[in-house]
Length: 195
Image (cartoon, rainbow, N blue to C red; front, side, top):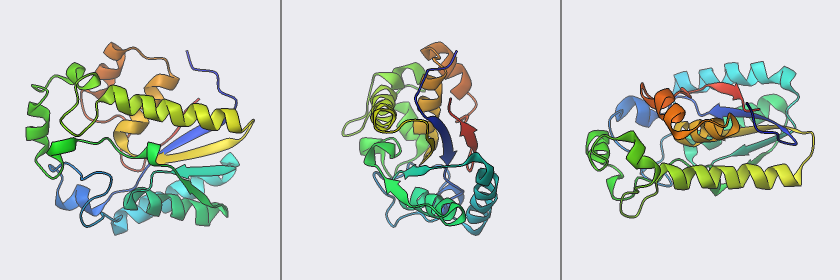
């Protein structure tokens, strides 16, 4: 079952970034890497291809996280489609708090490698999956009140988009974790219809 929304939404995860290539096992800084992580050449090509595939979707509006990698992604699409990009802080990646810049292994040890704990428990100065999901839902509900029968593209990050997609499909926590077990189900450069 899928949630009923007034608009049609598409979600796009940013293209491959330098952080993913050079520091694959290090947690991103929040709200932005230091220095910011731009798209790689491969990442730009991924997104150019996605942008061409969006031409027949009649996209009306593009909303993006304000991180470098998502801004670049959204700008490539916007240029291809002749649209402008609106940035929203609620579309940012998850805030790992004190684990920013540390190893992903160390960050996951905070949860004893238990994914279920990450929905409620948050690291000091960070946020939980539950909190991240709420801010993503808040964004979509705001946009859904403001517009009607529009085709809207949301450019964001893996976890925010996975949580939003799970909410749109009305998945429970158990189903969400099952989908997340082998890594984020929304891969780099993935484009999906939300509803």
